[in-house]
Amino acid sequence: MTDRVAVVFKGLAKQFFRSPGSVFWTIAFPVMLILIFGAIFAGTGISSYDLYVQDQDDSPISHMYIDGLEETGVLNVHMVPAGDDADSFIERNSVVNMLIIPDGFGNAFASRQPVELTLRQDSTSGSSMAVLTAVNAVTQQANINASRGQEYITVQRGSIISEDFSYIDFFLPGTIGLMVMMIAVQSIVGYQTRFRNNGIFRKLATTPMNNAEWLAGMMLWMLVMVGISVVAIMATGMLVYNVQMSIDLMSIAMIIVATGLFTAIGMIISQFVKDEEVAGTAAGAITFPMMFLSGSFFPLESMPEYLQSVAQVLPLTYVNNGLRDAMVYGNDAGAMSNLLIVAAMTVVAIVITVAISGWKKE
Image (cartoon, rainbow, N blue to C red; front, side, top):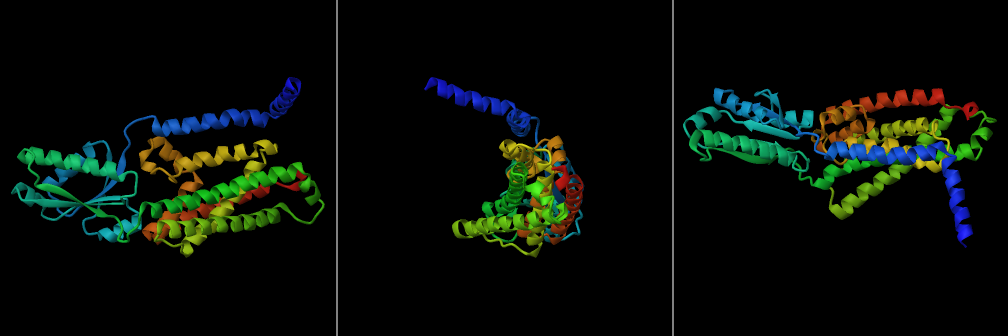
């Protein structure tokens, strides 16, 4: 019995070490994951968060208060024109945190009269509590400096949107974007390596079909699989968690274009993966970093700046942002902007795929 066990062990070991891809991805994939998680969670510095400030008072005292916000080192203050409608500005820019300093703030504070600031937030965002804490700290310090702590300035917290959304509503668009990527990339890499090893491509070389037609057919099938997944996600959210949102035409357009993009990316990856045993791991090495660096689970502003820069070149970032703009914030302009970026990436990926693939190369 011991000899037979040893034979099985030796056979698997030989098979493993004969495949350079197996060895590489077995080592590289976990190293990549620990580097990503380490960079996000290892305390690489104090995170900073965007805070939009509308100063309707425009007085020396309000300017001093804003200087205090900037000096925290936690808040990236962006000024909003005093004449802009707050609701319209929030919708146009998908704002997560916005502080409104009312007209008369300086006079009220100077005469020791109560005055209230309004902090409008997306309470489901990971940055909301950090921003609220920083604003409260600056407010408390201003009260201490003026009156030994008596609360003349108070902060009233309000919602960033009018509809009653829950956390699951904000989580669903990222989940949909994530599933589009995972289904398309993982399935395509698996299909391609399996077909290559089974000699399907050699048979296709004898037919009139070209690789562009093959890619189009694969995209259509991926779209069916993605559609099934999206229906399941939305049905579960509505039935179990009473999700309020729905998918509109802009969201559908983003899902279709994103499916084409990630199908093409899967095709590109499959050109460099010859062993079926490591296909899933190789695809995961591409999809897992995007999963954690594209805002599917964590707000981008909570990550170190260099990782935020990386996120700006990842396609899933724009898919997630576009879906949230369309499904949550009702920001059609933002959704269209993200859709155009994803569409441009899709065209580039398709051109690369058609150029580097082909039956003769298989």
